[in-house]
Image 1 (cartoon, rainbow, N blue to C red):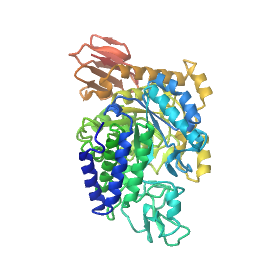
Image 2: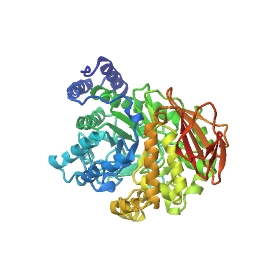
Image 3: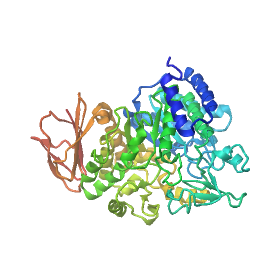
Image 4: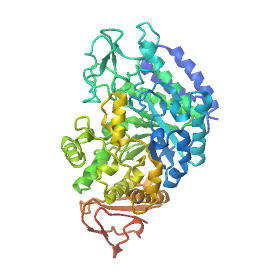
Length: 565
């Protein structure tokens, strides 16, 4: 059994506490360390430390995917057959659902509609799902919004009762809207300010970085830090394999700064990691930090913060590369000049689409204009005044099966751990009716709702039974690509060797380990291209176009081939 907590981790947590709170509240830390010891003694055995590098992640809303956890459990066989080995559950915790569940009202309860009630027996439905997922060797992570909660959370309901309430200091208050002026408005065009008035106290405002129904938590209060740690411990005890740390760049606020990526934020994340490493090492923290890679890599720390992070800038440049039929945007993004090296025990997560918009925050103004012009095919897809496009994969590519499959080829071979957004594997289109319904229900004009929407499984199953349908063709390609990826570990753990000497219209690279090499060649253009396959290896085709003769391959328009050696 591991020391609980080890002297090294105990020292680290003491040092982080000192950094955040100086000599205050040391008794609270001592009490918490005793709790940690008890939690570690009953925790499940740790998984392999870098398990997250080997998986294929599938991201879904439980209710929209198949009604509830019972429905999701029934579809685990489908997901396993597809090649999914990790589920990222979009918000499942109790919420009034004004921001698709990212507005959490109880951190230790699953939303009742997902499990059939709020009593212990109903909540046990999640445990049954988790056990079945693990039996199928599918790991499970889910979202925890650590920066903010819902204004319906008990903490805020208490805090708004008055300045003397013990929960008042769980949030950030002011008698002016002039504080933190350098902090940008994240929901530009939807929120006019980061401060919102408290109606029952005229002249009093609370701080929020997202919607005004999501007050930011005040981590200057150590009770908030410990409360969030106890949330993580609660779910680790249930057997959850990790957490997507939502909106972590904003945790710590300092006057005179942009209130992003501050040293206090990194100290908090290090504290969370030390807690998890004490109780169950290998429980991952996945950083949701939409920042330039040079900033994101700081969330790996010295392998003592998050184990994994999304590579946000490469995603829009995949679309740019396809629009311009040029490999340059992708190669430039993955160069060490733009994407620094990361610790060997950390990893990137990559994706084509997700529950949010196709964000254009991490590209240049010229790139943003080009991507927006190529893919924002309808005015209502615009998000945050040109900073994003709210549309699903199939609609972005105008229902072109070759373009969709080419995009998946890039996603499954290019970088790190791939994430598939639910429904994209069978070309689920935008859901404009869901968009209208949710805007009416929440009162917020939010274009992202159209990329969500429920799966109509009878209709999907019928479409999948027709091999000529776009749904079936896309599904078959995704399933086969994932099987080939699984059989070739170089595609998940190999280094990246760009083939910049090729025709610029060809995105080519080698993924290589000491034992295996995989060559990937992808035609980004709309016309056939002859490609000289790099010599020196005995390449054999494992997926794609089999037109290889005397070292020359003819890639059809938007075609691709994977070779192994």
